[in-house]
Length: 76
Image (cartoon, rainbow, N blue to C red):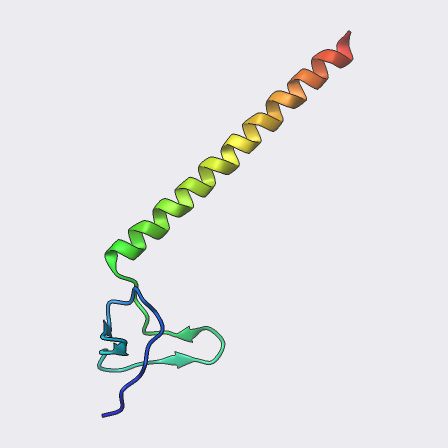
C-alpha cells in the first residue's frame, strides 16, 4: 500500500506525517478532498472568524459615530 505524506497538521487522518485514510481523493485545483479538520482545529477556526467579525462590527460602529458627528457639525 502506498503511503501518502501529508502536510496538513490538523487533519483527523494524519498519523505521524502520513495519511491514514482508507481512500484519498486529490483535486488538482483544491488539494486533498479527503481532508477533515480535527474538532479542536474546527473550533479554533470558528473562534477566529467570530473575532474577525467582531473587529469589523467595531470598525463599522466607529465609522457610524464619526458620520453622526460630521452631520451634526454640518447642521451648525
